[in-house]
Amino acid sequence: MHQQLIMNIIDLFTPQSKVEFYTKIFDTLDLSGFPDEANTKTSAPDGFSRHALFRAFMVMKCEKFSEITQLQEYLFNNQIIAHTCGFDIMKKTFHQEYRP
Image (cartoon, rainbow, N blue to C red; front, side, top):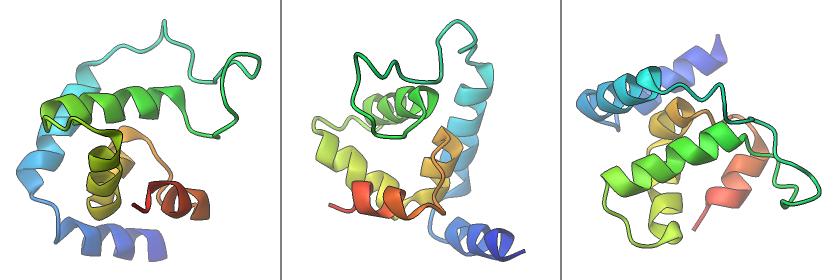
């Protein structure tokens, strides 16, 4: 129940057209051939879904950000978009990692 209330509040700050835009893009993606879990031997143990990171980089390209810090700030300030990417915005690590 609390999560739904938070999502309703977040909706007030992010234009619905953006949410709908990214939802449509992400719904058409077939990431089944792209493993979601990172290989612990070759990647940092960040705990983030590779699918969420891939979607976040798509947001970065669509928003024409040139730096990761711009993406981080955008996702922190538009958490419904971060949630649409697949990040768990309720986790404390999300706020620690994405706070510019």
